[in-house]
Image (tube, rainbow, N blue to C red; front, side, top):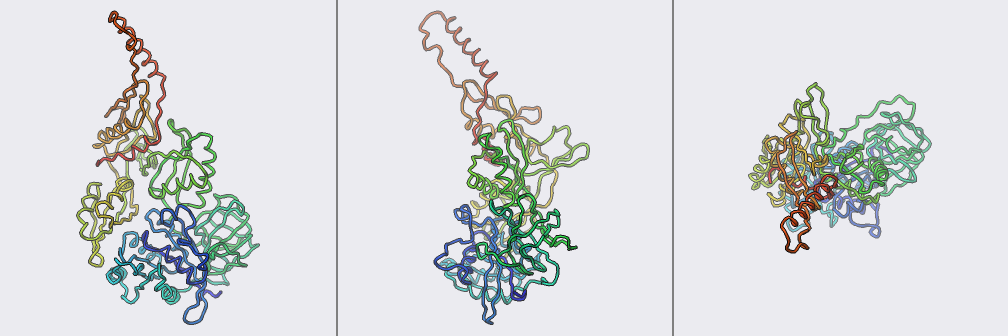
Length: 600
């Protein structure tokens, strides 16, 4: 098909604003899916996506639509995630498109993630088509939301479309507008083949399946292709498009979105954002997009040591299907051998853990999450630490730097005071305030990432009656007066329970952790001491009382020395047990560290 009859676009929006429903309606409208085959959230293939009502993976689809001019057009669209943790998926989709549909809920208006994704599209110089969705709701205020969009985007009111993805109203007009406003791809069929790799999956039978957007030339079965960054060369065994399942085609040409299968079995050989070209041709690499940076780290350990290799294989496979997390082996004195895994955020961490447990039938133990810190050593070297257990001795540390993010919070203007109070409690620095459409306010803060990554979103929802939304972007590492708090159980430090916190809050934080651990760790036959230490100094202590057998129950009367003898014998036995006894620490005790915050 000629490139002037191809349109590539992405659907971006805040979570739960109707992206997936609109994608479903486009599938029906273009005849790609029949009413008999249709089911809600058609493109959300994972059970986890359907259960949570969110999109986790970007889903490309190729359809045909005949406009009012009678010409058939090929439209390639990608249904992207809406949660802040999956912004990386959105950036990958935008790199393969010329335009976007910006979908906004008619009852909720512009949200923080809407703003963030719009800026991504503007920076990529993409055509933006604003759509007010869910106009069929009783609570919908489409005219007010249109005012917000015109003020935010600087467009004329008539450029904002109204639609109801649920009923199908306005969907035909959206498709017509896509053809009219989004420019065709600029690729040239006569140029050497080049394609951008924007995603990939692993299939047990076919190996690595690479998702590509063809920029120039064509690719077909039998071609020998090369990934320019790694130099990996392989032969193409199949090309195809998503309709919406994988449909083989003879070739993929400039402007098209599809997939390539080759004799490629190494799951680490594909680099997302790489350029695919014909092997041996002198071809310039395409500009990729920003690589994901893991911001939250936690340890994942198999509950049974014989499952360690199964966990390794499961992580290898998941790493190809989700390039935005990384992992490396580690060992813990308390938990044995496992992996230190990096994630974009807490939701991303929960999703990965659930996918590992479901798809690979694993039972996992997860340590409390930590953010990444930078350490400046006294010898001038700088290195990152992903776990408090990696922090060196204080005598070798010049300074500790914590990650700081740019936080944007979108709220109705009556909740501005509550949000400002919450942000200031978490060491946020106010950077600006702007009003959008008269009803909403966008607050700008710079705030330590550790202060928002755990429960800030929940507190934000509570203080704004569910209306507040947020988005964040990493800025830099900045010095902070932080210390490592070690937790000792029965005199032995447990590396998985260590935390980094502000020096003036170390004692209070240690006491709260010990109080929680005292409730979670079961009693033993001997007294168990729980201690919190900063360096060599113990700052807090709790004791878990032992079970006690009444050895005097059978001692009726007689001299007091007889009773003392029995008590001394019991005391010596307890002493021997304490010297050689092992402490059982349950999984929920590790999560107690996460649930104890400085501001409780």
